[in-house]
Image 1 (cartoon, rainbow, N blue to C red):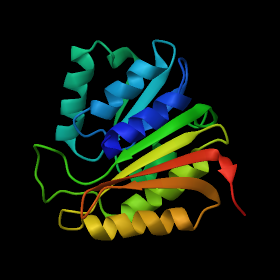
Image 2 (image 1 turned 90 degrees about the vertical axis):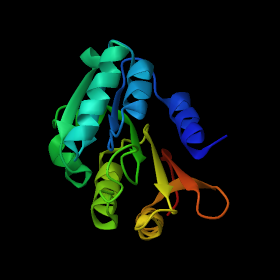
Image 3 (image 1 turned 135 degrees about the vertical axis):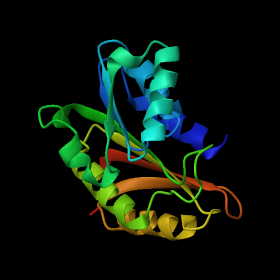
Length: 185
């Protein structure tokens, strides 16, 4: 299985109908649709991206699958996660997904940055309840990707949550799987 499939399988094992989820990097909407299908009509997914083109692509994909009523699109930086999600919703979050790098089909010079990603990971870990899960896909093969990958590793090493890392050979993508119910101190 590819890292993206591993992350989706992990999330699917934990996210249930009526849950709340966040796609912190909406991109072309694949993860947003995946999450929206899992939470069902009673759940909700917040889809965040800093690029207008990404939100347009995500909206189009959600509409094609008739999933837009269970989603909210947010134009913003994932590092501002805690400010972007309504306070009354935050305790109900059960899954958070990151798919880092650049927008496929978009400008490859516009990439997620190590600094904002680290801030986003810390914010996500703070929002994640003990019953929550998180996945992060990092890509080491594009300019800036290795630095961001190392920043992800550092951000996760600084917390007390247990995580699992699934790496592909060479410079391929890496799946980080975080289960908030397990802590190491």
